[in-house]
Image: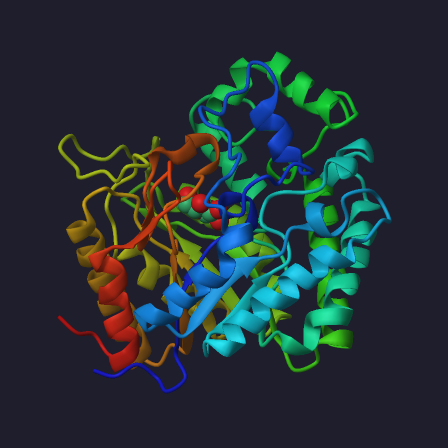
Length: 419
Ligand code: BGC
C-alpha cells in the first residue's frame, strides 16, 4: 500500500491569503473600497509574512515533505519597473527555510493577485501584460531559480473561464468578479478600478479576463514564465495549475459535460502537455444532464463552501488528465472547508485511497499538497471558511495543529495510508 518513493507530501498556501498587508495588489483594493463585496478584509491575514519560519517549521514538524507557496508579484514589483531586492530576499529566505527543514519548495509565481499598477495598464486584457509577467518571472528566477525544484507558473490559469461558466449557469453575465454578488455592485468595481488608478472599462483582474483574446494574453504570460524558467532554472520541473472539477454526465448531459470539460481543460491541454507535469486542483464534482447542471439532492452533505462533500473527485480528475495527456500529475490543491476536523480526516483518507488506486493502475502521480496549510483568507468568503491543517487564532495569531494535520503527517512519514 506504499506510495511511490519520493512522493511529495505537502500542504499549500498562497501569498495574499496568508501573508498579510499585501497592500499593493489589485484584490487589496477590491477588499478595501467602499461597498466592497468582500465580507472581510485580508489585512493581517495569518501574519505569515513575518511568521513564515515558524510556519515552515510546523509543516516540517507534522512530517510533511513539501511546502507549496506563492511569490507575490505586487511585493516584488510594487511599481512598474521598480524591483524590490528586500522582497526578493524575503522569498529567498522562505526557500532557505524549506531547505533547512527538508521540505521541497513548490513555488507558484502568480496566485490570483497582481500589482495595482498592472491594472492601470489594462491588466489581463492588455497583451503587453505577458511581457510584464515575463520580466517579473525573469527577475525572480534569475536570483532564486536554481533553488526551485518545482515551479508552478500560474495558479488555476483557467480560473476566469471557470468562473464565467459558473456564473453564467447562475444567470449572471460575464465577465465576473470572484463572487456572484460582484455583479450587483458595479459601483464597487468602479471604485476598485479607481483605487488602482484606472476606470471600470480598463480594469481587468485575472478573474475577469475570460474572453478568448484575454485567454491568449494569459497563455502568453505563462509561456514567458516557462521561457524564464528554462533559462534560469533548468533543473526545475515546470507546470501550470488548472482548477478542474470532476465533470460528469447523466444520460442526456454528455454533450454539455463535454463542452464544460473542453472549456476547463481541453483549451489548455496543449500548454499542459508542453510542461513537465500537470498540476491539478480539485474541489468538486459537477454533474450535467440535458437541462444543465444537476443540483445536489436535498440532504446532500455540503462543505462550508457550499458544495457537496466529494473526496472521490480528485482521483477521477487525475486519471482523466493523465489519460488525455500522458503527463505525470502533481496534485497542487485538494481539500475541504469544514469546522469538523474528523470529517477532514475522512476526506483526506478517502481522497488518498482513490489516488493510491490510480497509482496502482499506472497513473504517475508525483505528489499531493493539501489545501491548505492553515485556515486563511478565503477571498470573497473571508475568514469564515476553514480549509487548514492548522488553526489560526485571529486575535493572537496563535497556531494550533489540528488532528488532520498530524494525520496527513503520519501518512507522509509512512509513505502509506495509515489509520
Ligand atoms: C484557490 C485557492 C482557494 C481554494 C479554495 C483554489 O481555487 O487556488 O486560493 O483558497 O481554491 O477555495
